Amino acid sequence: MFDALPHYKHQLKEDKRNLSNVSKMPGFSISRSAYLCHVGQKLRKVKGSTCEKCYACKGMYNMPNVVAAMERREIFFNALDFVPRMIAVLNTLRKPEFRWFDSGDVDTVRMGLNILEICEATPHLQHWIPSREYGIWAKVLKLRKLPDNVTLRMSATMIDGIPAGSWENTSTVNSKAMAGHIGHRCPAPQQGNKCADCRACWDRTIENVAYIEH
Image (tube, rainbow, N blue to C red; front, top):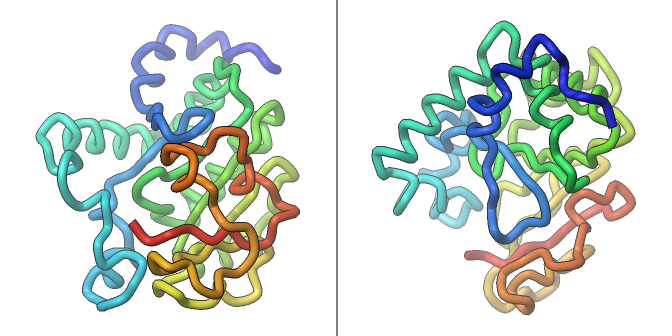
């Protein structure tokens, strides 16, 4: 593992505040506001979509302190020196799993390219990028290949829908009965809503992960 970039060590404490420590998952993550999703905000208006009842657009996500934290993260994501600063942050992590966007999604092709540059520079981590922004990532992958330590998992748009297109790694959401699920069934509902020992979302050999609607 690389040491944090010396020039950015003085900013590390502040920048690390941008990470999320979601109790369900084995490692850290980072989020954006779900209100900024391009595809997601359209899907919120579609009955039966996987974004219709978006958890990140209700409850605690609308509290002033959470809104302020999202605004701070947005400034961080769009900073000119975001790439070296995020590399410095990630190089301090001990747990090998990292998730991008525990809420929200990629915003632009430039952001996607920045994220993959960061992933490539942090080979000690396994990066999971869930997304519904098929168009943005298609453009990104025309410009560069996916690093070996990245699982870009495209999310289905409809509950009980089929996996997204011809992407290598996908995820689907099934209704409560989980009838006819495809691929690896997320075990979290049977183990206290935690990943526990499961790392399927980060595993590129698992084509599709099926989650239960929540």
